[in-house]
Image (tube, rainbow, N blue to C red):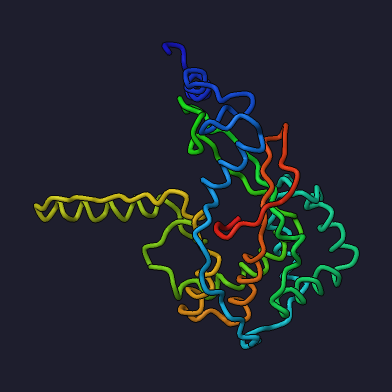
Length: 272
């Protein structure tokens, strides 16, 4: 460590940590890949039973036609090196198509939002299992990370819908929500805490803090419940219905890069 400099510090740390296994270890007693995938799916996408389905309103209140500019911004928001889903089509395919025939993707996205529909094939999620580095026990599901790989066409339509939902997001977000918000960062949260601590110190007072971490929050979202939350927070009916369509009938196929499940399996929880 004496000769370690800032550029090589992380390499030194990585070498000191246990290396993830080259292939999936035995997980909760499962030895075959199919059984391991089943164990991981039950851990990350548990079946919480059936809940009442959101009833679509079929209302197009506040809907406006999708524009070519919206689609272009959505395509630009997708990284060119983003890994494709099971369809293996990279983002560059849709970018080139939009340059040549901008009406095609625009009309497809407009139809999806207007009819509150997303084809089932765009809801097939290829889920990559990645061992978390530095774990001492790879025989438990929590030692792994699940990365969802979506069809890039689905990502594009999702970004258009997301941009529209962002307008209404302040209806249900606290002013102290810093994560996953444009113009906010974790540093803002740190500065806010420091400001309150310094003020308390200047007033001769003590400060205390309680930190909570919600593990696997996105993995545990109930597909039937999210639309109801959006309705309560006054999102336009067509966006609520589209989100319901986006989440329903979703399936995953787990792979570790070397082996894959033979078919997609339906799930009822989690946001990809």
